[in-house]
Amino acid sequence: MTTPTENHIVTRDLTLEHPFEWLKKGWEDFKRAPMIGLLHGIGISVAGLILMVAAYDKFWILAGAITGFLAFAPVVAVGLYGLSREMERGGEPTLMVVFKTWWSWRGKPHHDWRLVRFGLLLCLSGIGWVLTSAALITLFAPEPVNQPLDFLRYVVLAPDSYLFEAWLMIGGALIAPVFASTVVTLPLLMDRKISILDAVLVSWKVVMENPAPMALWAALIMVLTMMGILALIGSAIVIPVLGHASWHVYRDAVSADYLQPREKD
Image (cartoon, helix red, strand yellow):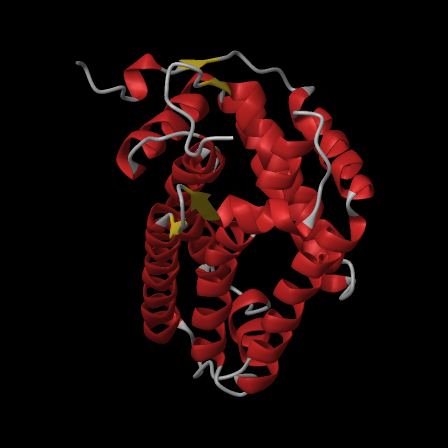
């Protein structure tokens, strides 16, 4: 028997209207289960705040911690994908659905470590960016950068310097492949029996075949995330809405019916 791979998965054409539809659907899912969404959002926001307080005067430790945490946040949001799937099926969004999303039921609970392994890979990619960024700033900044204000003063606002522009370009070049590798990977891993590598290849296929809609989606994620951070409590809402929306990205972009479901209903 041939093992199902990414070659058996159909990817669909997307339009520039789709990203806004995903946000709308994500908001609608959030409104149907607001308390569960807020539990995810507040939990992630509080953990991020603790990291900022603990490492405020250690800029690179702070940058590494936040980068790694934000990279792992989509994995934490897997329960939200499960809620959206349950609501799509006509079921009730409950905490038990979140629990069952993480644990497959075959006589006894069995954790799906693919999700954790992929989350660790995301953290490693974040650490790679922090190390690259630290090396760039350390070599070319006119003064030592130890705190966020130093970064603002000596990098962002430095006169007659293109260091900040170079930092942004390198960051974009490193972040783009990560985005392409993750845009539908986690919902696909949660929904179907497929290897991490094959799921990543599907995600790349979606992005390569729909560059404009995916670029718009990435921009919306960045803008909304920054707005949530600046608004402090806003992250508690932005995070679950984006989590629910990510499920709809997967559903609109991919048809994986050929693959076996990850768990038996």
